[in-house]
Image (cartoon, rainbow, N blue to C red; front, top):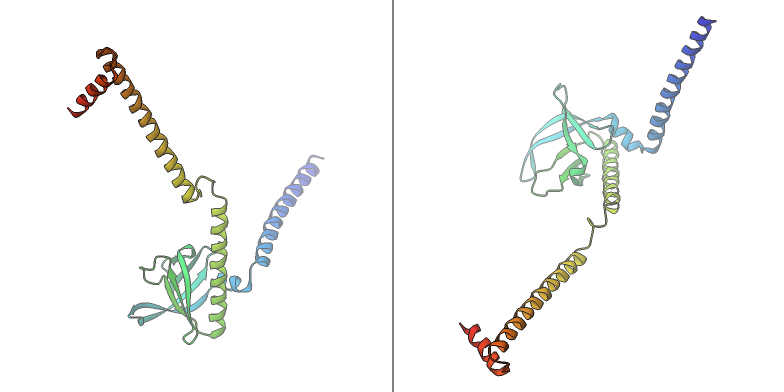
Length: 217
């Protein structure tokens, strides 16, 4: 009976493991089904020719590279063909636009900082590969822009307060401070006036003359 119970428990654990594995498989399949063919092709990677140096827009040297989209779709990874070095990284959030050269099958990734050199410039070996990667890159940039916009929409209200409202708040604080200073000055003037009225025996014009004399000192 004990052996039968242990066997049953083992079967239950195996079943649980199978279910966990099945859940992961289902998630992977669902993700794959929601991704376009272009994105899937980019994740598999492809060979390109990379421009490694340029002067006045003319490429001076080229090298064969392998380019691949990261699993999280956040970056392009590229390495020289036959190299065992760690791949170079191009974060897609740093990409402003993709310039296309249909005649040369060339794709150039420009940074958001226009003062920088292109992040990556590659030439496809065929028009089909060129079109697939062009469509995939544009799709990724659109997704990134949409995600960034959604993130900004969720920002706290105080962080996305329009500049006009912030300026109005500063202006209100300025006038409030000025009113307080004017009120304080009036109280001080009234106190001085009462003092001089008392010293002049209640003669208003004499008190005002005394105040004016002290202010000129």
